Length: 258
Image (cartoon, rainbow, N blue to C red):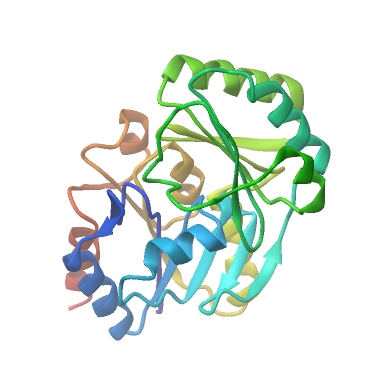
Protein backbone atom coordinates (compact mmCIF):
# COMPACT_ATOMS: atom_id res chain seq x y z
CA UNK A 1 0.00 0.00 0.00
CA UNK A 2 1.27 3.46 -0.88
CA UNK A 3 1.98 5.74 2.04
CA UNK A 4 1.47 9.49 2.34
CA UNK A 5 3.20 11.65 4.94
CA UNK A 6 1.90 15.12 5.74
CA UNK A 7 4.59 17.48 7.06
CA UNK A 8 4.18 20.69 9.01
CA UNK A 9 6.89 23.28 8.27
CA UNK A 10 7.69 25.71 11.11
CA UNK A 11 8.89 23.85 14.18
CA UNK A 12 8.90 20.55 12.27
CA UNK A 13 11.12 21.03 9.24
CA UNK A 14 11.96 24.75 9.36
CA UNK A 15 13.93 26.21 12.27
CA UNK A 16 15.29 29.77 12.13
CA UNK A 17 14.49 29.78 8.39
CA UNK A 18 16.66 26.71 7.78
CA UNK A 19 15.95 23.04 7.00
CA UNK A 20 18.33 20.39 8.28
CA UNK A 21 20.04 18.37 5.55
CA UNK A 22 19.17 15.09 7.30
CA UNK A 23 15.46 15.91 6.97
CA UNK A 24 15.83 16.78 3.29
CA UNK A 25 17.58 13.47 2.66
CA UNK A 26 14.93 11.54 4.59
CA UNK A 27 12.09 13.08 2.57
CA UNK A 28 13.91 12.20 -0.63
CA UNK A 29 14.39 8.63 0.62
CA UNK A 30 10.67 8.48 1.48
CA UNK A 31 9.72 9.48 -2.06
CA UNK A 32 12.31 7.17 -3.62
CA UNK A 33 10.52 4.34 -1.80
CA UNK A 34 7.39 5.20 -3.80
CA UNK A 35 5.61 7.23 -1.13
CA UNK A 36 4.07 10.71 -1.21
CA UNK A 37 5.18 13.81 0.70
CA UNK A 38 2.66 16.57 1.43
CA UNK A 39 3.58 19.98 2.82
CA UNK A 40 0.82 20.98 5.27
CA UNK A 41 1.32 24.46 6.70
CA UNK A 42 -0.31 27.70 7.73
CA UNK A 43 1.97 29.49 5.30
CA UNK A 44 0.73 31.05 2.08
CA UNK A 45 1.85 30.08 -1.41
CA UNK A 46 4.30 32.99 -1.40
CA UNK A 47 5.73 32.23 2.07
CA UNK A 48 6.04 28.51 1.33
CA UNK A 49 7.99 29.23 -1.84
CA UNK A 50 10.29 31.56 0.12
CA UNK A 51 10.87 28.91 2.81
CA UNK A 52 11.60 26.05 0.40
CA UNK A 53 13.37 27.84 -2.44
CA UNK A 54 16.95 27.31 -1.14
CA UNK A 55 16.43 23.56 -0.72
CA UNK A 56 16.17 20.52 -2.96
CA UNK A 57 12.73 19.42 -1.76
CA UNK A 58 9.92 18.57 -4.19
CA UNK A 59 6.68 17.94 -2.32
CA UNK A 60 3.98 16.06 -4.21
CA UNK A 61 1.14 18.25 -2.90
CA UNK A 62 0.66 21.32 -0.73
CA UNK A 63 -2.04 22.00 1.86
CA UNK A 64 -1.58 25.72 2.58
CA UNK A 65 -3.11 28.57 4.57
CA UNK A 66 -4.05 26.06 7.31
CA UNK A 67 -6.15 23.99 4.92
CA UNK A 68 -7.83 26.77 2.93
CA UNK A 69 -5.87 26.09 -0.29
CA UNK A 70 -4.67 22.87 -1.93
CA UNK A 71 -2.02 22.88 -4.66
CA UNK A 72 -0.23 20.34 -6.80
CA UNK A 73 3.56 19.99 -6.81
CA UNK A 74 3.90 23.07 -9.07
CA UNK A 75 1.65 25.25 -6.88
CA UNK A 76 -1.25 25.06 -9.32
CA UNK A 77 -4.36 25.63 -7.20
CA UNK A 78 -6.69 22.62 -6.93
CA UNK A 79 -9.08 24.02 -4.29
CA UNK A 80 -9.38 27.34 -2.46
CA UNK A 81 -11.45 29.25 0.10
CA UNK A 82 -11.26 32.99 0.80
CA UNK A 83 -12.23 35.38 3.60
CA UNK A 84 -14.95 38.05 3.41
CA UNK A 85 -13.31 41.44 2.88
CA UNK A 86 -15.32 42.91 5.75
CA UNK A 87 -13.55 40.64 8.23
CA UNK A 88 -10.10 41.72 7.06
CA UNK A 89 -11.12 45.37 7.38
CA UNK A 90 -12.63 44.94 10.86
CA UNK A 91 -9.62 43.00 12.17
CA UNK A 92 -7.26 45.67 10.88
CA UNK A 93 -9.40 48.45 12.38
CA UNK A 94 -9.46 46.79 15.81
CA UNK A 95 -5.85 45.62 16.04
CA UNK A 96 -3.98 48.42 14.29
CA UNK A 97 -3.93 50.52 17.46
CA UNK A 98 -2.85 47.73 19.81
CA UNK A 99 0.71 47.64 21.12
CA UNK A 100 2.95 44.63 20.51
CA UNK A 101 0.86 43.36 17.59
CA UNK A 102 1.61 42.94 13.88
CA UNK A 103 -1.16 42.19 11.39
CA UNK A 104 -0.56 40.58 8.00
CA UNK A 105 -2.85 39.57 5.15
CA UNK A 106 -2.18 36.74 2.72
CA UNK A 107 -3.49 36.50 -0.83
CA UNK A 108 -3.04 33.82 -3.47
CA UNK A 109 0.07 35.53 -4.81
CA UNK A 110 1.51 37.86 -2.16
CA UNK A 111 1.83 38.41 1.60
CA UNK A 112 1.19 41.90 2.97
CA UNK A 113 2.00 43.61 6.25
CA UNK A 114 -0.86 45.88 7.30
CA UNK A 115 0.59 47.17 10.57
CA UNK A 116 3.56 46.28 12.80
CA UNK A 117 3.71 47.49 16.39
CA UNK A 118 6.06 44.70 17.46
CA UNK A 119 9.11 46.34 15.96
CA UNK A 120 10.76 43.27 14.46
CA UNK A 121 10.43 40.51 11.88
CA UNK A 122 9.23 36.98 12.65
CA UNK A 123 11.03 33.90 11.36
CA UNK A 124 7.62 32.41 10.55
CA UNK A 125 6.63 35.23 8.20
CA UNK A 126 9.86 36.97 7.19
CA UNK A 127 9.01 38.15 3.65
CA UNK A 128 6.17 40.49 2.75
CA UNK A 129 5.22 43.80 1.15
CA UNK A 130 3.76 46.70 3.11
CA UNK A 131 0.20 47.54 2.09
CA UNK A 132 -1.34 50.95 2.64
CA UNK A 133 -4.70 50.31 4.39
CA UNK A 134 -6.56 52.29 1.73
CA UNK A 135 -5.71 49.51 -0.73
CA UNK A 136 -7.06 46.66 1.42
CA UNK A 137 -10.32 46.47 -0.64
CA UNK A 138 -8.35 45.85 -3.85
CA UNK A 139 -7.31 42.29 -2.95
CA UNK A 140 -8.85 38.88 -2.25
CA UNK A 141 -7.61 37.37 1.02
CA UNK A 142 -7.16 33.81 2.20
CA UNK A 143 -5.70 34.47 5.64
CA UNK A 144 -4.89 37.08 8.28
CA UNK A 145 -1.84 36.08 10.35
CA UNK A 146 -1.53 38.02 13.61
CA UNK A 147 1.81 38.10 15.41
CA UNK A 148 2.38 39.02 19.03
CA UNK A 149 5.23 37.77 21.23
CA UNK A 150 3.02 38.48 24.28
CA UNK A 151 0.86 35.46 25.21
CA UNK A 152 -1.60 37.67 27.12
CA UNK A 153 -2.14 39.87 24.09
CA UNK A 154 -2.62 36.79 21.90
CA UNK A 155 -5.18 35.40 24.35
CA UNK A 156 -7.11 38.69 24.36
CA UNK A 157 -7.14 38.86 20.55
CA UNK A 158 -8.09 35.19 20.21
CA UNK A 159 -11.08 35.67 22.53
CA UNK A 160 -12.21 38.79 20.67
CA UNK A 161 -11.96 37.08 17.27
CA UNK A 162 -14.04 34.11 18.39
CA UNK A 163 -16.64 36.33 20.10
CA UNK A 164 -16.93 38.64 17.10
CA UNK A 165 -16.52 36.28 14.14
CA UNK A 166 -16.68 32.73 15.49
CA UNK A 167 -19.48 31.69 13.12
CA UNK A 168 -17.73 33.16 10.07
CA UNK A 169 -14.12 32.00 10.31
CA UNK A 170 -11.59 29.75 12.02
CA UNK A 171 -8.69 31.02 14.11
CA UNK A 172 -5.73 28.78 14.90
CA UNK A 173 -2.94 29.18 17.44
CA UNK A 174 0.58 28.53 16.18
CA UNK A 175 3.57 29.47 18.33
CA UNK A 176 3.54 33.31 18.51
CA UNK A 177 0.87 33.63 15.82
CA UNK A 178 -2.88 33.50 15.45
CA UNK A 179 -4.00 32.51 11.95
CA UNK A 180 -7.42 33.67 10.76
CA UNK A 181 -8.63 31.52 7.86
CA UNK A 182 -11.97 30.78 6.15
CA UNK A 183 -14.57 28.79 8.09
CA UNK A 184 -13.94 25.03 8.33
CA UNK A 185 -10.30 25.44 7.30
CA UNK A 186 -7.89 23.29 9.28
CA UNK A 187 -4.84 21.27 8.34
CA UNK A 188 -7.06 18.23 8.84
CA UNK A 189 -9.89 19.42 6.58
CA UNK A 190 -7.36 20.37 3.91
CA UNK A 191 -5.72 16.97 4.08
CA UNK A 192 -9.14 15.29 3.97
CA UNK A 193 -10.07 17.34 0.89
CA UNK A 194 -6.82 16.32 -0.80
CA UNK A 195 -7.42 12.65 -0.05
CA UNK A 196 -11.00 12.78 -1.33
CA UNK A 197 -10.08 14.65 -4.49
CA UNK A 198 -6.89 12.87 -5.50
CA UNK A 199 -7.15 9.44 -3.85
CA UNK A 200 -10.87 8.63 -3.68
CA UNK A 201 -10.36 5.17 -5.21
CA UNK A 202 -6.91 4.35 -3.83
CA UNK A 203 -6.61 5.72 -0.30
CA UNK A 204 -3.00 5.68 0.96
CA UNK A 205 -1.89 4.91 4.49
CA UNK A 206 -1.61 8.34 6.13
CA UNK A 207 1.23 9.54 8.36
CA UNK A 208 1.46 13.03 9.87
CA UNK A 209 4.19 14.92 11.70
CA UNK A 210 3.80 18.32 13.34
CA UNK A 211 4.74 20.10 16.52
CA UNK A 212 1.97 22.48 17.55
CA UNK A 213 -1.73 22.95 18.30
CA UNK A 214 -2.67 23.79 14.73
CA UNK A 215 -1.42 20.31 13.75
CA UNK A 216 -3.95 18.50 15.95
CA UNK A 217 -6.68 18.30 13.29
CA UNK A 218 -4.08 17.00 10.81
CA UNK A 219 -3.03 14.34 13.31
CA UNK A 220 -6.67 13.23 13.68
CA UNK A 221 -6.67 12.34 9.98
CA UNK A 222 -3.65 10.07 10.37
CA UNK A 223 -3.27 6.35 10.68
CA UNK A 224 0.03 7.14 12.41
CA UNK A 225 0.90 10.56 13.87
CA UNK A 226 4.09 12.00 15.34
CA UNK A 227 4.91 15.07 17.40
CA UNK A 228 8.09 16.12 19.17
CA UNK A 229 9.60 16.06 22.63
CA UNK A 230 9.32 19.87 22.66
CA UNK A 231 5.66 19.91 21.54
CA UNK A 232 3.00 21.07 24.01
CA UNK A 233 1.85 18.28 26.30
CA UNK A 234 -1.62 18.01 24.75
CA UNK A 235 -0.09 17.71 21.28
CA UNK A 236 2.27 14.94 22.43
CA UNK A 237 -0.66 13.15 24.05
CA UNK A 238 -2.56 13.17 20.74
CA UNK A 239 0.14 11.35 18.75
CA UNK A 240 1.27 7.75 18.88
CA UNK A 241 4.89 8.73 18.26
CA UNK A 242 7.08 11.39 19.88
CA UNK A 243 10.46 12.05 18.26
CA UNK A 244 13.34 14.51 18.41
CA UNK A 245 13.74 14.97 14.65
CA UNK A 246 11.51 14.53 11.61
CA UNK A 247 13.95 12.15 9.95
CA UNK A 248 13.65 9.78 12.93
CA UNK A 249 9.97 9.23 12.17
CA UNK A 250 10.59 8.72 8.45
CA UNK A 251 13.40 6.27 9.11
CA UNK A 252 11.27 4.38 11.63
CA UNK A 253 8.42 3.92 9.14
CA UNK A 254 10.73 2.87 6.31
CA UNK A 255 12.52 0.41 8.59
CA UNK A 256 9.19 -1.22 9.48
CA UNK A 257 8.65 -1.92 5.77
CA UNK A 258 11.73 -4.12 5.56
